Image (cartoon, rainbow, N blue to C red; front, side, top):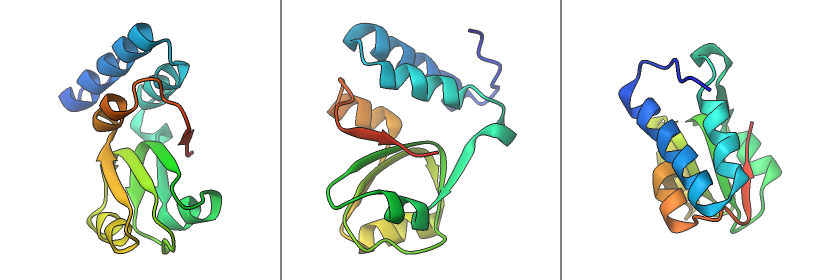
Length: 119
C-alpha cells in the first residue's frame, strides 16, 4: 500500500505504525495506519461528546484523525490522536484525562491491548 500523503509527520507516523504492527503482531496499529493513509477529506474528526458517549472511566481511545472540542467530557479518559484542537486538549485535562500522540501510545502499549478506535 503506497502512502500518498504529503505531510511529512503523517507519512512518518504511518510508516512507524506499520513497523509496530510487524514487530508486535498488533493488527490495531495496521488498522490505524490504513485509516490515516486515507485522503484528508475522508479522515475522521471526532468531537469530545462522542468520546464521552462511547467510553467509560479509564478507557484508552485512539482517533485516526483530529479530536475537536465540541461537547464535554465528564470522566477521565486517555485519548491518542494525530492532532487535537486547543479546546479539546483543555477539556481533556479538565476532566483529569490525558491526551497523547499516537506514537506515544504505541510506545506505552505496543500490543495495543484494551485500546478502542473511535471513528
